Length: 250
Ligand SMILES: Cc1cc2nc3c(=O)[nH]c(=O)nc-3n(C[C@H](O)[C@H](O)[C@H](O)COP(=O)(O)OP(=O)(O)OC[C@H]3O[C@@H](n4cnc5c(N)ncnc54)[C@H](O)[C@@H]3O)c2cc1C
Image (tube, rainbow, N blue to C red):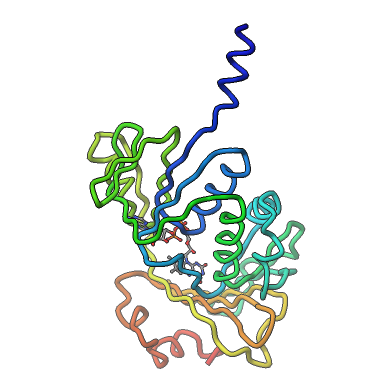
C-alpha cells in the first residue's frame, strides 16, 4: 500500500515556473519537460531573442545539448575547434592546447534557436511580455502582481536577476561576483588569415582580444578590458586605441 501511494505520488505531474527564456531558462525548462514536468517560462521581452555573436560550447554544453536532442541545431553555422592558444603582447605563447575534449565555436543565435525550438517541441509554455518581479514562498511573482504556485521555481533571468534580488529581500544569502571586465562581442567578415578551426586569444596589458572560427564567411570576435578603460569600452570601437595595443593585429 505504502509503495502504491509512493509510486502514485511520484507519478503526479509536477509543475515548474521559470523566469527568463535565455540559454539557462530554456535548457532547464526543456530538461524538466523531457522528464514529465509541466513547465511555464516567463520572458520579459516581446519575443525570445535569438541574437548574439559567437560562443564557445564546451564538453559539458555539448553533452547537455545531445541529451536534450538539440545538438545538431545548436552547432549550425559553427565549427569544431581543434586547437586553442593564448599569446601575450611579446608574442609568447602562454597557453596552447590540442583539444582532447569536444569544443564547438558556434553562433549564439543557433544555440538560443535550438533551445527555443526544442523546448516548444517538448511542450514548454513560453509567455513573452511576462516580466517577473521575484519570488515568494514557492511562488513566482509577476510584475503584474499575479502569483504562480509551483513545485519548483527557477530564476534564470540573467545578470540583473529579479529572482536573486527577491532572495536578498527575504534575507536569503546570495553571492554575486563582479568579474571586473567589460566586453564587446561581434561578427566580422572573415579575413584570409582568420582561423578555420583554431580558437586564438591575444593579451595586451589588461586587454584581451579573441577570434572564434565559424562556418561560412564570418568570424566571431571578442574584446575585453577593465570597466575603467574608457577608450577600450568606447562604442563604436576606438580603432586607434586598440591598434596601439595590438600592432600585429591591425
Ligand atoms: C543578448 C545577449 C547576447 C550575448 N551574446 C554573446 C555572444 O555573442 N557570445 C558570448 O560568448 N556570450 C554572449 N552573451 C553572454 C552569454 O550568452 C551569457 O553568458 C548567457 O546568455 C547567459 O545565459 P542566461 O540564460 O543565464 O542569461 P540570459 O541569456 O541573459 O537570459 C536571461 C533571460 O531572462 C530575461 N529576463 C531578464 N529579466 C527578466 C525578468 N525580470 N522577467 C522575465 N524575464 C527576464 C532576459 O530577457 C533573457 O531572455 C550574450 C548575452 C546576451 C543577453
